[in-house]
Image 1 (cartoon, one colour):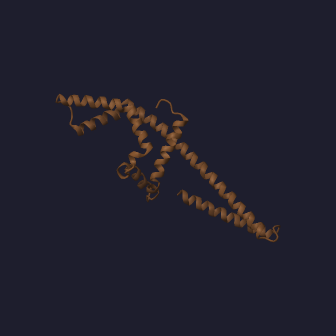
Image 2 (cartoon, one colour):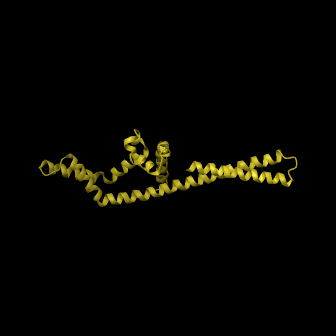
Image 3 (cartoon, helix red, strand yellow):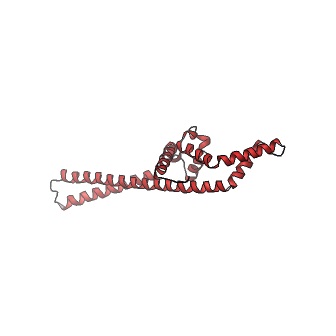
Length: 188
């Protein structure tokens, strides 16, 4: 990819988000990180919609536009050698073309470029997720403070009383701890 624009980044983020949302239940239901990785590694085999994901379509198109000509030329070369009695059979043809492709300069450049692009996209998604988490946490705190102040002023006959102020502070602190624990447990 010659130039990677902010529109390209946004489009890739959207595609990756769609894929992650689709496999969210499978991954979160995994008993360990290793199991979640295995689920992702075998997604093509286990997810009937795998080839319909926009991210997968994008990767297929990206690989084909980068390596398609080279692969076709190598296949043609091997099949013409086979017609002359020198070429490999189908299974060894696929293995040979795969090996030649993976050892090529074009493949290495494509993988390097794709890795850099995806690092930018994933880092941006992570940053956005963290910003959303912070925003949600702040909104929950504001809601709690509003409820606490209403509770303290509505339910206390003498809001200047030291005892009532301490009760309100304790109530607020305990509720913040519960909210924090709830948010952290969701992130696990």
